[in-house]
Length: 124
Image (cartoon, rainbow, N blue to C red; front, side, top):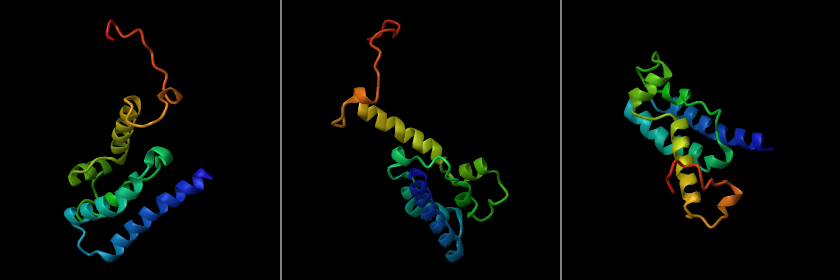
Protein backbone atom coordinates (compact mmCIF):
# COMPACT_ATOMS: atom_id res chain seq x y z
CA UNK A 1 0.00 0.00 0.00
CA UNK A 2 2.77 2.47 0.94
CA UNK A 3 4.66 1.64 -2.26
CA UNK A 4 1.62 2.53 -4.40
CA UNK A 5 1.16 5.75 -2.42
CA UNK A 6 4.84 6.64 -2.85
CA UNK A 7 4.68 5.97 -6.59
CA UNK A 8 1.76 8.38 -6.89
CA UNK A 9 3.64 11.07 -4.96
CA UNK A 10 6.66 10.78 -7.25
CA UNK A 11 4.58 10.61 -10.45
CA UNK A 12 3.18 14.14 -10.13
CA UNK A 13 6.58 15.88 -9.85
CA UNK A 14 7.74 13.87 -12.88
CA UNK A 15 4.68 15.02 -14.80
CA UNK A 16 5.44 18.62 -13.88
CA UNK A 17 9.01 18.19 -15.14
CA UNK A 18 7.60 16.88 -18.42
CA UNK A 19 5.30 19.89 -18.64
CA UNK A 20 8.26 22.21 -18.05
CA UNK A 21 10.29 20.43 -20.73
CA UNK A 22 7.56 20.64 -23.35
CA UNK A 23 6.16 24.11 -22.61
CA UNK A 24 9.15 26.29 -21.78
CA UNK A 25 11.56 27.14 -24.56
CA UNK A 26 13.63 29.29 -22.19
CA UNK A 27 15.43 26.64 -20.16
CA UNK A 28 18.21 28.75 -18.78
CA UNK A 29 19.63 27.99 -15.37
CA UNK A 30 17.61 30.74 -13.69
CA UNK A 31 14.30 29.71 -15.26
CA UNK A 32 14.62 25.98 -14.60
CA UNK A 33 15.81 26.56 -11.04
CA UNK A 34 12.89 28.89 -10.32
CA UNK A 35 10.36 26.43 -11.79
CA UNK A 36 11.93 23.46 -10.01
CA UNK A 37 12.07 25.20 -6.63
CA UNK A 38 8.51 26.49 -6.86
CA UNK A 39 6.67 23.60 -8.54
CA UNK A 40 8.58 20.34 -8.06
CA UNK A 41 10.67 20.43 -4.92
CA UNK A 42 7.85 21.40 -2.51
CA UNK A 43 5.91 18.31 -3.55
CA UNK A 44 8.94 16.09 -2.99
CA UNK A 45 9.71 17.57 0.41
CA UNK A 46 6.18 17.71 1.81
CA UNK A 47 6.03 15.24 4.73
CA UNK A 48 9.04 13.40 3.37
CA UNK A 49 9.84 12.15 6.89
CA UNK A 50 6.84 9.86 6.52
CA UNK A 51 7.09 8.63 2.96
CA UNK A 52 10.79 9.32 2.22
CA UNK A 53 11.14 9.54 -1.56
CA UNK A 54 14.53 7.84 -1.43
CA UNK A 55 14.38 6.66 -5.01
CA UNK A 56 13.27 9.91 -6.60
CA UNK A 57 15.88 10.88 -9.15
CA UNK A 58 16.85 14.56 -9.36
CA UNK A 59 18.82 13.95 -12.54
CA UNK A 60 15.88 14.57 -14.84
CA UNK A 61 15.36 18.05 -13.44
CA UNK A 62 19.02 19.03 -13.72
CA UNK A 63 19.18 17.84 -17.34
CA UNK A 64 16.53 20.39 -18.34
CA UNK A 65 19.04 23.23 -18.09
CA UNK A 66 20.47 24.31 -21.43
CA UNK A 67 24.20 23.83 -21.92
CA UNK A 68 24.55 21.46 -18.97
CA UNK A 69 23.32 18.21 -20.52
CA UNK A 70 26.88 16.87 -20.94
CA UNK A 71 27.95 17.51 -17.35
CA UNK A 72 27.93 14.85 -14.65
CA UNK A 73 25.01 15.04 -12.22
CA UNK A 74 27.05 16.41 -9.30
CA UNK A 75 28.54 19.07 -11.59
CA UNK A 76 25.06 20.04 -12.83
CA UNK A 77 23.80 20.43 -9.25
CA UNK A 78 26.83 22.57 -8.41
CA UNK A 79 26.38 24.58 -11.63
CA UNK A 80 22.79 25.33 -10.59
CA UNK A 81 23.92 26.44 -7.15
CA UNK A 82 21.48 23.95 -5.68
CA UNK A 83 21.83 21.04 -3.30
CA UNK A 84 21.01 17.37 -3.54
CA UNK A 85 17.57 16.35 -2.32
CA UNK A 86 19.20 13.78 -0.05
CA UNK A 87 21.18 16.50 1.72
CA UNK A 88 18.03 18.57 2.18
CA UNK A 89 16.13 15.54 3.54
CA UNK A 90 18.94 14.71 5.97
CA UNK A 91 19.01 18.30 7.23
CA UNK A 92 15.24 18.34 7.64
CA UNK A 93 15.33 15.00 9.48
CA UNK A 94 17.93 16.38 11.90
CA UNK A 95 15.79 19.46 12.54
CA UNK A 96 12.69 17.33 13.23
CA UNK A 97 14.72 15.06 15.53
CA UNK A 98 16.02 18.09 17.44
CA UNK A 99 12.49 19.45 17.83
CA UNK A 100 11.18 16.09 19.01
CA UNK A 101 13.95 15.55 21.55
CA UNK A 102 13.69 19.09 22.91
CA UNK A 103 9.95 19.01 23.48
CA UNK A 104 8.71 21.19 20.64
CA UNK A 105 6.01 18.61 19.95
CA UNK A 106 3.51 17.22 22.41
CA UNK A 107 4.64 13.60 22.07
CA UNK A 108 6.40 11.10 24.30
CA UNK A 109 10.01 11.07 23.15
CA UNK A 110 10.66 7.71 24.82
CA UNK A 111 8.48 6.12 22.14
CA UNK A 112 11.06 7.13 19.55
CA UNK A 113 14.36 7.47 21.39
CA UNK A 114 16.35 5.74 24.13
CA UNK A 115 18.50 8.19 26.03
CA UNK A 116 21.77 7.21 27.67
CA UNK A 117 22.44 9.21 30.84
CA UNK A 118 26.00 8.02 31.26
CA UNK A 119 29.06 7.36 29.18
CA UNK A 120 29.53 10.88 27.86
CA UNK A 121 33.16 11.27 28.90
CA UNK A 122 32.34 13.48 31.88
CA UNK A 123 29.78 15.69 30.14
CA UNK A 124 26.30 15.99 31.55
